[in-house]
Length: 293
Image (cartoon, rainbow, N blue to C red):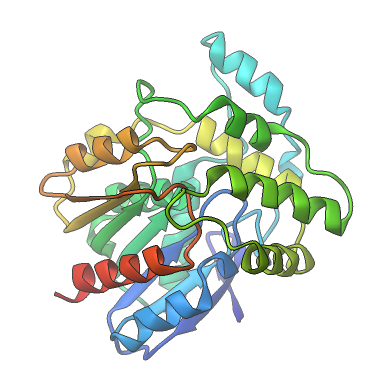
């Protein structure tokens, strides 16, 4: 893994495959680290002929932490938003898109295929809107347009996300496992051994709950991107599960409806699953077909 200076921060990244192959930038979701794009998933994409780049967003993993911006009071933010008050986030989804473009700049990549899941899909959409000449194709996985009229996450899932992370390695791992139990779909189910190992590696690599809180405020205050998405002219694939309790399926349909010519794939029984198992093997094949056809 390596670091690069981009957009006035340091970004930790890793690559797979031949640098002369078409580049594919993978953007992770809320509180995630680059390791949440499973290595076998990345290698499958690289073996098909893509130059795969995974990275830590700001405030996660080994990239720069924005601690100078303070730790937001999430309940205060929610209260203000429900009251119709304006909330100034520490940074925006568009700022995070600028980070990703800065990484491409640092790697000398003029254009790339862009793929994001969850919050990463929001960032990918913002990147495609703001920097259309840098995008070869867009893949948005269980993400949303920012349309405020869309259904909300299930209350019990949102309650888990808003609960404070406990101190200590094992309590933190168990806390995150409870979240992933709640958001994983019934078709694949959560592989407890695999997930526990991943959460342990992630904790040892970096533990930054205040950074996750700042990212969450960026999500809560995100813009409605539908107008910008309607202007996209890049091949777009939208993937969503019909059992997603965090970002309901309607958000995926809304995304596909907003982007001209977008292809929508709804996966039966998939929730907000991590890239592991048979569903994600198929998603890798979908991405390969979308980017290399």
